[in-house]
Image 1 (cartoon, rainbow, N blue to C red):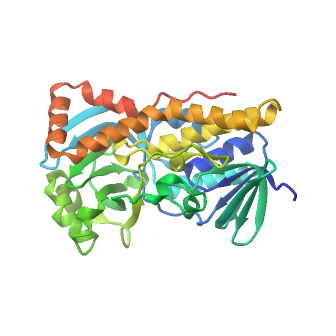
Image 2: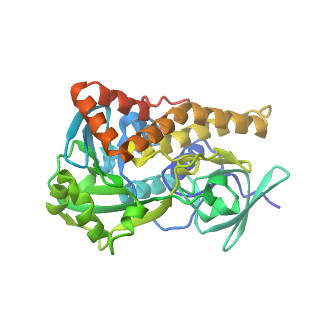
Image 3: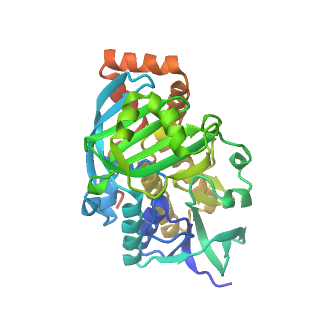
Length: 376
């Protein structure tokens, strides 16, 4: 069977598109399969750490063209309204997935990446070649990257261990108009979850929260849940009551799983949320998606340029590098998530953060990376 491409990427989110641009820029033959059309809204916090800016510029994807919100301050509140503030060590920016994904999609096309709108139904690996079946065709490739997000039918096809476990988390997101400090990203705790609030481009407010399904299902709809649960936090109540919903309806996803995942499965190199999901409260999943694309792309360029590097070595090297860069961040995310579930521990954290101003920036550094350097 004729090989269709050097690298086939399944999923066209941030990680998939960044890897497509990176590898295409280095003249590899890349095909990306994405089931949805661009542009589209996605459930996401839409805050990105500035650590990723050097890499985006190297990809010829200068996000300043999208006029993102410049973010430098962080604020955290407990359910009863106690608040702690800090300056973000590196700062960040706010940009909607609607604009950013479409922007990267256009960049990938400009770099001669083949992008197919289709759904993958099966993946097989035999004789050093992948066969990928979609609803309309069969493709082959030497390398497959898995960039299909937090949870997918492909996880079941591949028999990934985490997929059999039920998750208590669901996420809700919408855009609003209203007054909010453009330089601020805020995390507000409420009973059963936490809510991120920040500006994106065009002075739009993005509100995205993670909620415990057990608490959520007691209410008839999202509006009732927000009024009865999120409004208990006075800061959230004020934000919602002084903002106007811009979407026809909220976006939501369920069964968000924070269980450990493998970065390599069935010889597929996983990137972004497909490899591992950091709790949204850490506010850095978007930067990690980009960074994982950079790591895998550099490993693949070495693999294709050096015949002495075996597939086994490639997989071991990538798994090691993924863990080195993200293992600590994800662990810290799990620890923080456990703390925020408990009201007393959350109040203690805020008390300590107010008493010791250096504490909150130190915690933030544990979930963020340094500015990314580019390997030419």
